[in-house]
Image (cartoon, rainbow, N blue to C red):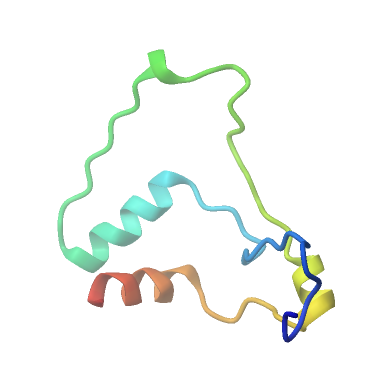
Length: 82
């Protein structure tokens, strides 16, 4: 049995804010001091692609009390220094 939450329930762990790939690349570039370069291949884009996905952590908060407390920049910095 889980300590908190429901067995079999799906929980999104998300900060409630959307980030573009460009946002993530820029933040990583600033951390690593590697200049950012991005190219988008229009041939790989599809009309049904979702331009923005933002998760909802309401179920996780309701069942466990969890809420986002760490900005994504802090998470990226931890990943980089690991």
